[in-house]
Image (tube, rainbow, N blue to C red; front, side, top):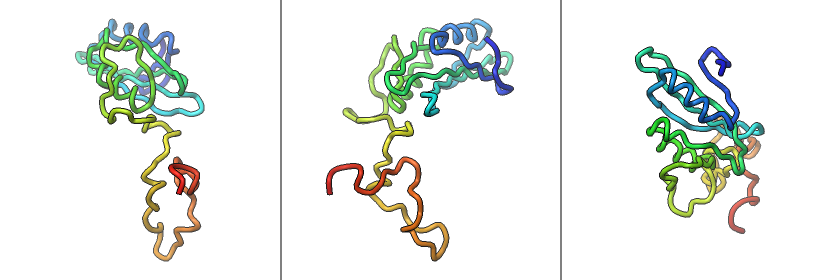
Length: 161
């Protein structure tokens, strides 16, 4: 495995996810810091984990990409138990499945919640239901402004009026 940038990020294929994480753990990265994802459309969903070699005061980042629909990675909980909570959150917020996870129950969202709120394709319902307040500058018209990303055209989303 090679370091792909000065910040210590190691990019690996999804098939090498656990193998690369095991290599890090076995080389002294004994502390699991965090795991999350970001929507890297159109490349897919990037899943990122940060670990530390406490004795050396050195950090490393492991990153891979999965498909936005049906993306799955094996869990890292057998290497670092602390990955469990982070994987559950990432599963809910981005829709990544962590196969073999010991407790895949929803963590943050209410039962029956539909969608993954941190993905780019998730509609920002609060911006649809309520006009974005005010203008940027005094005297500027709100009517001529562009819609922010993630806000559908009026009348194109939600229940019929």
